[in-house]
Image 1: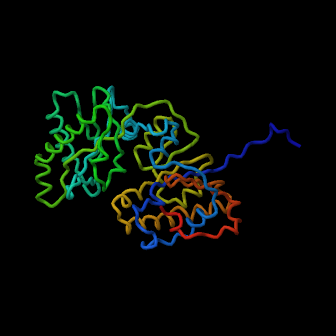
Image 2: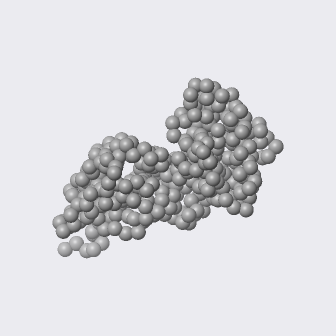
Image 3: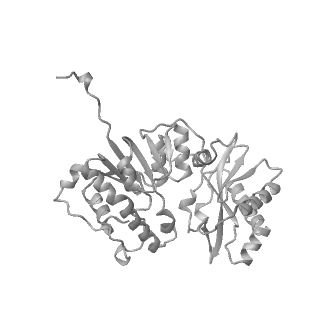
Length: 348
């Protein structure tokens, strides 16, 4: 009989799917009044999995992924690293993304969908901003047409709301808070007027396109040492790509064909980050949200259940970023006493 030293440990495949917005919130809507998709594979996974406590939102999930302090994900540094490979230089770095602000009675609502900012528009607006702030040591950089960054000489002294959680909402309670918040509120108003006056926006308005009349600051914080147990991160989000670079972990784009990928992926723990549900949910576009859930059912959940059933994948952990996590293993398929609940039973 061979000695224990002769055995080689078998490394299995474990997958964690982070899908913020999968189970809502539906903003006070009654699920019974919504035309919900039929998702039998997802319903089975949710019904027969072990349920535990999970991250409450996507940024808490990403902080846990990288071993960063809870509630202190340095999103601007990480996204910049993911997009440029650089750290952004000294001083503080903030995401300063272009948005459309729309007055609605006594509120101002934020929108960033369907802006379709061109590279030329982004360059022109950033140039106007930098000329306006030439004496302030602030600099606006457009890394991509819709991902801008504000370079500051010193700490801003504010806490902010991530852009994904400001979409479609009244901005007043979401504006920067902290010891210097009044100064930043005044600056944001100045910049809004500056952007409004630019020829780029006059042209957009004349052609019936939403104006780029604001920037949204978010993502403050400095990088600290982190660690992760995952071998590979799969995501199209540059923020996740930046986490991979910071932690020297392989970060790759999402697979185009999940079923084929499942048949060929190597062993170890893999993180899959899927963010396509956040935007339609934020704008209460439930038709497109339901369609996106059905696409996930066909592309991911059906092949995943088959891979677990065959033994190809040992465990699937589903993180809907609502305070829960669902762990599903092969033996769970024999939990016949747990009848599959309707998808609506899990929505918030």
